[in-house]
Length: 109
Image (cartoon, rainbow, N blue to C red; front, side, top):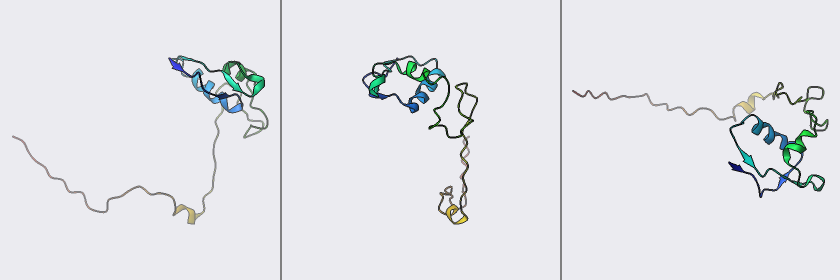
């Protein structure tokens, strides 16, 4: 049992990610997920607060207007970025050992 009580749960749009995760992990039993802020939602179960969205992302939080999450788990967010060639040199590279590998084979009889 995951006890989530005695935590100051702020019920804003971001809390729906926690409910989404809990919904998709039915083997996780939990209790105590109650809104403490904002005042108008104090005492509400977080699940009930999230249901007030009617499955739509508020327009001010929608990263791609017209393509918001419908609550059905059918959308994905993609980050597209461009990096200048000079910036590529600053990115970490895999560690490489320039020494040749030497192996010692010991046969047991």
